[in-house]
Length: 238
Ligand code: TMP
Ligand code: ASP
Image (cartoon, rainbow, N blue to C red):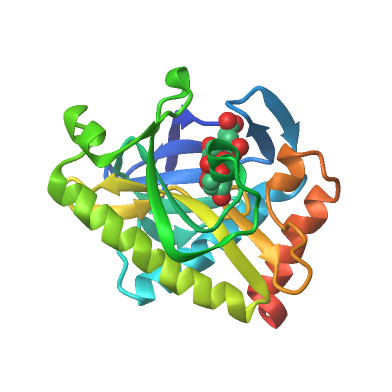
């Protein structure tokens, strides 16, 4: 597989073309941003951790019947994935109140929901990723009804699989963000990444935060939290 020109640079990843028009290489950076890119920093080792963790979780999800973009881990930071057209929706599932949910609705963090919540944001940096509902997504033609139904059922299944897996690692899966993409034939697959950048993880015993909130909120021990999540996920397998 030959790596060719850079197609795109995002806040946390770069994407490169390959000699196969249906495959691209994702390269994970140590750069961290928060609050629409207004807060910037580096989390040493994050790129390699997110790459390995996301691939491990994507494989687990594929085994559970959820189609993903994952093809092959190439090295520490780089992974070969199927080229998709990203659906411009950030799909957020919450099991416990935290972050923007707690702020928006004026409740404390840590309230355990009877059922997971499901929400979309419009993936649009200029508009600051506004919250939107299904009828808005349809009106804006961001996805079809069928695609939204598929995305919703896949996202809830991802939650079931990941919640159970992280519980075995002594970690509470508080909430997370997913992105989906369309293959050339229109099939919807899970894309982007699943990592401490895109999930909230709390230690099951102490509720200590083991995710990017340590960077967002200047809590310290940011690198240590990412490394701890790596140990929890891979255990003796590292
Ligand atoms: P929120 O509480 O700030 O809306 O975040 C919900 C979840 O989504 C949390 O696990 C962090 C993740 N997230 C991202 O992956 N990217 C983002 O740009 C934002 C705002 C949140
Ligand atoms: N990565 C996003 C940004 O830079 C936000 C976040 O994860 O908090 O805006």
